[in-house]
Image (cartoon, rainbow, N blue to C red):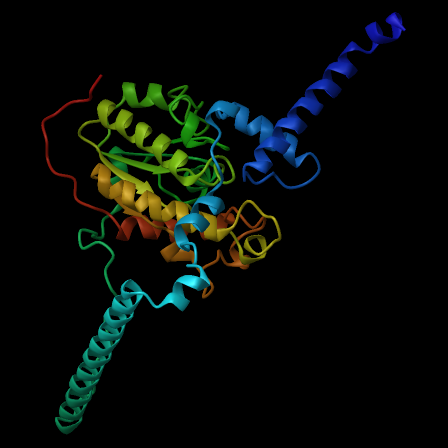
Length: 342
């Protein structure tokens, strides 16, 4: 028996570790974390969570639980409505007044619109369509020279931009599977000039810093946990690159097929919630928010199936749209005489 155990110690070690990870994966799932897909999904979730510093004492609940709590307040008990107390009567009166006011305003707007239409028809003209709302009036169109002092930091999607978008003037510090939790320590795959993102930001001076991560963080921690980590990274980049304008990019959507797949961690509802939080963070930190989904989304708000081979990443011949999006969504960087923080 001893000889058997000695000869198979590696096997028993693997089995023990797998059982331990499976147990921790069950605990994470009970807290609302979404397991990874496929066989061993809970083991993969546990390993990823431990790598990102999520332990029992700092465990967070998953996005959906938080959103459900915030989205719909607990319904009042039926007895409260049966009582018809003064509080509810007053509330009903206020609601009725608001509905009457809203109806009056709508009627007035309709009357104005109808009058304008009649006047335009009499003058032999047609009413113009409502122009598309500009998301940020600061945006302007630039040439590729704009990116000569820019660095793009992100995960595999930014690796794709580096390889296929034709942006030869820019610097890329990107790595497959990069997350916000390990961004600065991540080993760069897109250039041999530096080893890590942090080394590159200390060594070089940039006027624009583009950030894009978040896909690999889906299912790990809730939105608040994600944004807190993102905020810390932005603050550190601002310290190292005080002259730089920071662009915080929203997470690109996945295909409709993956989005609607049962139990999929990668779904567009979760991405949209994180993107809303990223837009708020950009405003808080004095950064610029960019949402490349404006250039790619189909009528359902999904990444078109014809643009992707794996439901997540773009095919090589569709990165030109991303390049064009960058060219038409640039913000002028104020002149400054400051130097890097290091």
